[in-house]
Length: 333
Image (cartoon, rainbow, N blue to C red):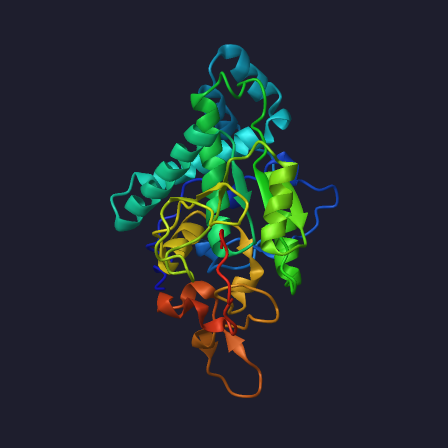
């Protein structure tokens, strides 16, 4: 992927670094080492998630979209009670700014947003399968904005005087997990304030458990793309395969490619797992994932160095770091 020069790359006017919702604040102001926040202005240097106050302009803008004056006053005076509504509204504004651009990517983004909007209309609040990878990270950001829009559109279902419902989320833990992925998911959970369930079972059993514990769910969104194994024929709305737990798979970014994913993450400064800064481009378990050889930097001595994932020039080499293929296709992938 070719990354635009810093002087020419346009960044959303509200970078995520400038606003951290109260749910992410910690008393001891710990550094979160396995979240990476891209920042083009500092050459993608590693940034801390600082404890910051919500920007007053963002609270007011969110309040202006509420349905009545009482709601606006409640939101402005009691913003700590509405962390998801405020944060998700900020994410929604960022995405809307990208949608206004007339580019091939903005058209793909609109397609993804339309799928999510349709899914909320069909199913109400639906589930999300989160594995800590780049595609799921994109999807989580999109889902948060979609939930905010759904709430604004349907005050009869989600009261303007309440915070947004949490996104029902399942993390199916790999048998050979990277510690960085587990820590990143914990940090993302705090940032987006998810209704997160972690399950250490084979995928089919894990999905069954998730749906039993969240028995109102009829759909689960997954960060699958058409270039993933066994995914070339999937559609944005695809039921699960026979003999698997029954639900609708919602696949908003099915038509995105590798460059699209990194365009989104970098343009919006979305925090992502630090493994992508170390040369990994596709994450599985520690038993079947290595740094992508295509990103290896030629250097003197025995030390091996790799460029970050977004520097991969040929997206078709994304899975070059995956050393073992699954023999059985998964219904959510």
